[in-house]
Image (cartoon, rainbow, N blue to C red):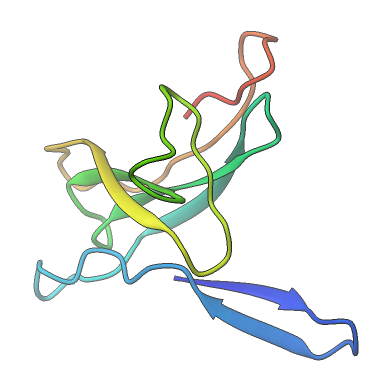
Length: 106
């Protein structure tokens, strides 16, 4: 899983954020990738892993800065957390603010 961003010169920069689930052959990696926002303007990445897999996963910045639901992703420093399993043939995730508070739901 990579973040693609344009640098100041206009050139694309690719930064690796995570590898997804590499343990489940033949399907590996991540199936759907979405970015969620929280009140504090922190971002998190949500995925289904592996491809059409059995896990809902979020990527956060690090294990020590995880106060409750405060999920943070900074370039190149993502920590993988499985938040739900087992699923059967998981396909998609979505992040949206459904209850009009300041955090997205997954």
